[in-house]
Length: 265
Image 1: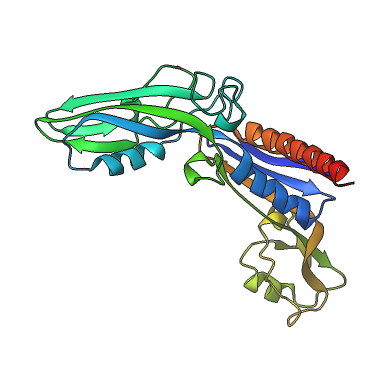
Image 2: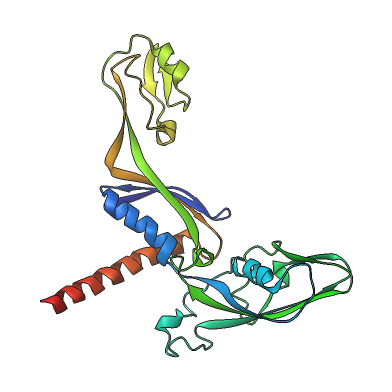
């Protein structure tokens, strides 16, 4: 198995890579682990002391829960794996507060105050609620680690993959212009009056393309061992952290599976 990075845009939180010499089972397992199992921090409980805004407590709490929070996996435990057994302590929970009184204006995520400077809203400009004259919002929130399989607010990213396109020119193409005319992905070009493959555009190829009616020497197929992954982080963790944690979790699950097999014997 081999991994080749295609793009690593840390500013936009995007990562793409080719997973070589693998299979669909492992590829999809890796995708599901990144979305469902890699933990992230999110607001779980909200206690209101005052809220006379236009939005009900439940709506404000829901909006707060969906605010992505920078996550420090080294400093916090999942509640079910914490020594307090999920009762709540500073190793599995974090207190946050929001107090806003405005004549007329929007309350933003940046106004949420955290007791841990490492855990704060990823996007400070996210709107929470608009307060009119005389309206006030005061609350205390509790953030905790969780997994995307329990609620999407704990999912750290969006991940998808596709089979790596395989493009072949097996012989002389008599009418290369006809291929170019229907090639909307620009994967082909004409060099010295012959049809050639534009290697920079191969990964953009639409696997549904079929050039057999024009020329049977031009073939587009999908590799059954190579996969192109695309990861977009929501900001709680970097793409590198998400992939590494997903692989660590996979190792842990495999070890647990082996232990269960031993017990079954």
